[in-house]
Image 1 (cartoon, helix red, strand yellow):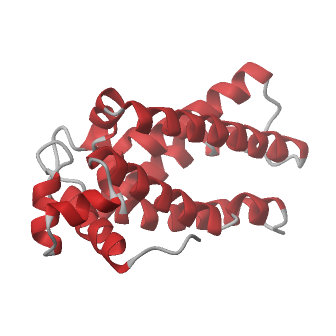
Image 2 (spheres, rainbow, N blue to C red):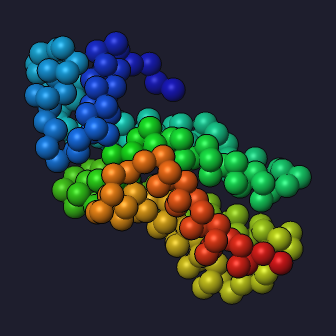
Image 3 (cartoon, one colour):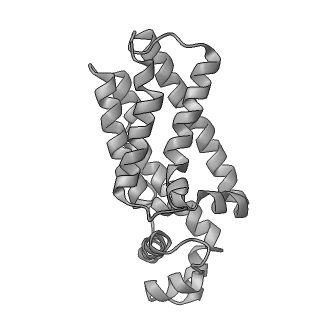
Length: 197
């Protein structure tokens, strides 16, 4: 993990708190600087704009996901389905800590081009990893046989629910930890359990 200055960590921490509490659209760099008790000049020394802060927070979240080594753990587990369930629980905790990224994803993707570019790269990688897991489950007779098209569709659906469920929930409700657990339940009920042998 890269070493960061105290000021940069502070900016990120307060930005994350504000984005989670309110929304990314209404929070400005001035709000972040005020909460962090630093000058806007100091903030702009570390970040050119709000998009750069959001990207840095997103990359921090990605590092946390990758530090779990979850895909390797599933592939090496005596009970891959149990490990998959544990993986989702760990993911839910991280998603909760960075919930604004899930909740505001549509706005972020439509207004922040650099963020969108990085997000699409991660999305493609994750879909490939999920696809590989499904193929592994089929090879181990955990899942029923599926065509290549079905595998890809299932991987995309898995990613879609994981990533956009909170955006969907936030239309009518306040996002809670329970709504993140609900996303896991939906994935298992409609995209894992029906394919079990």
